[in-house]
Image (tube, rainbow, N blue to C red; front, side, top):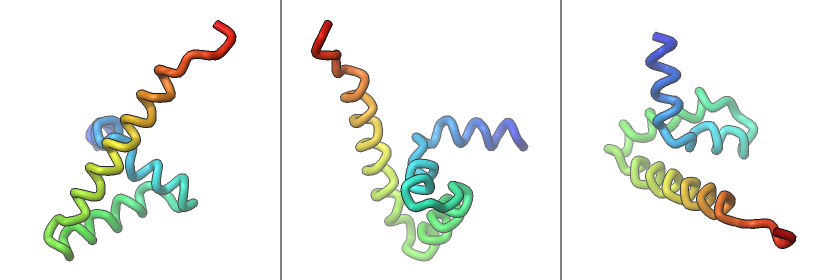
Length: 71
């Protein structure tokens, strides 16, 4: 079970952990609320999740591509 949990956390883009760090809440609680909202609203938070995942990926790409001024 721990292997499955680690696999899902690595492949889930880190959105829930990012939101948990920003809000100051455990990432497990953010995941739980996300799952509950997905069931209650018939999956519409999935669009929000994918948007944030895309935004975090682009942001990390931009940070990696920046070169220091003094090179």
